[in-house]
Image 1 (cartoon, rainbow, N blue to C red):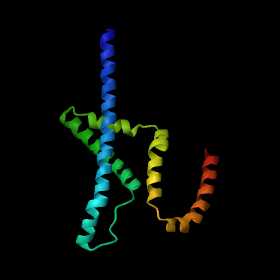
Image 2 (cartoon, rainbow, N blue to C red):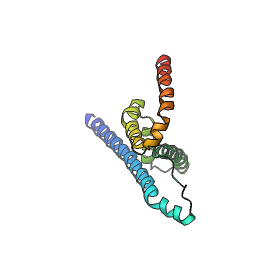
Image 3 (tube, rainbow, N blue to C red):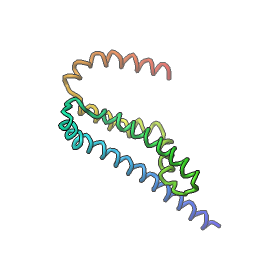
Image 4 (cartoon, rainbow, N blue to C red):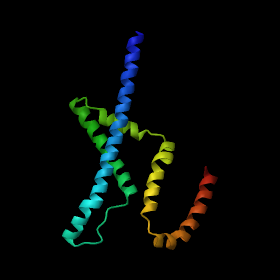
Length: 149
């Protein structure tokens, strides 16, 4: 009886690792596609349509939109799999686990690289021009948030 529980626990741990790998791989694929589109495809499309102002949204917005689309796909696939009785649930379970991630993980692990990426690509001219307004809005916002919480 103890061996059966041990095997079941081991199998569940293996599935959890597999779900984490699926989410990481999906994120890597989406990130690679966004970068490829930005660096390789976008210049070709700009030249073909002679539209120099054509651009992708910022990377952080692209990541957010990819998350929304992935969540929608998960919901659609879950319904379809449930209707057909298919048992390929690893994608659905992986996305469900990613949706339940702790907010502190997002704030401490995912947000800093996105802010860094935005800061690296920011123009110093624009930064100097908007820094006064940003600081004027940031300090009252932080104080208000601290008071509310």
